[in-house]
Length: 394
Image (cartoon, rainbow, N blue to C red; front, side, top):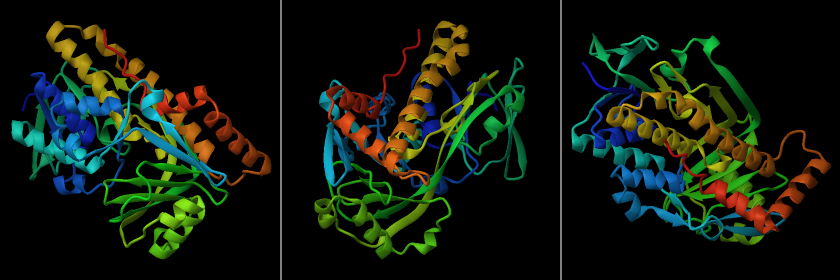
């Protein structure tokens, strides 16, 4: 088999890159080790930055998102029993965020790829990347007991933190930055109406809480738990009781509870690898970086990587600008680190750390009070939350 770009991973970043390249007339093949149903079964993020929303529209896959997604013009922070709203649209020059689940984004991209006839190979085994620094890179994989070779110009590693792409780069060629947080998020998905029209991030002495949603009838709530907690120890009743304790009284009184559809604990950490490219291989999304979910940046950062690589490859094939290939990592990492900073700051501001003493608690409260009491502070939060601009490729 031959193609111009081999994409490893059929999650939202791989599918989005494939769709954009296809529309630009650049041939690509996506290889995925899991089945389509498995990929669609992943419960993930649901807050899309303005930049990602615009990119999905550019890719021609926004029809259902624009029809069913919820546009949010603000977000709320709760602490000391009070709620403060950040007007995202006003403070960011008209930008907003879209509430639309990652599963739905993935489904839309799968449908678009199927409709245009582009090739995605699922249930692949033993995927291997070859000649990454040679003149003719290629990928091999096994399917139905046969070994298949794909010759290509470039490889996009969109296969996540545990994927083969980053593992194919010699360890001595990479520098890793990591911070592991001493707690996780216990999340519950339920078919109940949201307690508020917009997200509420809560700082409480018992720990962080988040009131989120997937639609007007499906909610996603989180509470901070210690890193050694087990999900089976949390009944629905225990979860709802704990969530209510961490919310302002009026909000807790309006909370509608119900049986959980899905319940899981996600650990929190920050992770970045540099550089994000090695020869003809380009790392995209979780293959190169992970952020704590507090800033809603994980999926959105992957989308900005996709945008950067797509715009570079378009210029490579249309204008012969191979010089731009060496800029991929540099351009991506500038935005990655700013998003890492914001996610770290939000995590530090809103969570209860094991070593937080009375002084640290007061600092958290004062930091919140300062930023929310200042127009400049509110603007800083807003412009980061809706997403910093994508850097142009020139």
